[in-house]
Amino acid sequence: SLGRAMLAHLDPAVLERYLDSVEMKPLTDRTVTDPARLKAILAEVRKNGFACTQDELDYGLASVAVPVMIGDRAVAAINSSANSAR
Image (cartoon, rainbow, N blue to C red):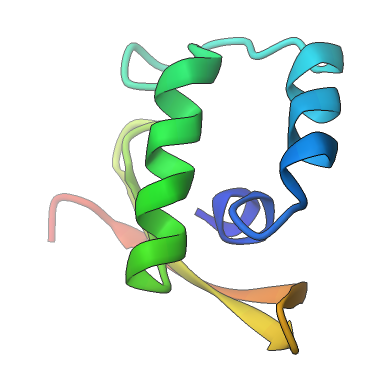
């Protein structure tokens, strides 16, 4: 969720260059590796103001993150993670 909170606020051209250069490897069967799906998720993150994930980085891990904004630029993000079974 931390990365999504940051990526959601990148300039669209910068995001495209990033997605063209990064290899998205699945860490679990829930990891998003499709760039189009990730872009749709990032649009929701921008709209909602926060990002959530569950079982994408590791099974049993849920997290939520919010960007720290200066103007319209995300300069950092704050994340909280917990066991998704709780």
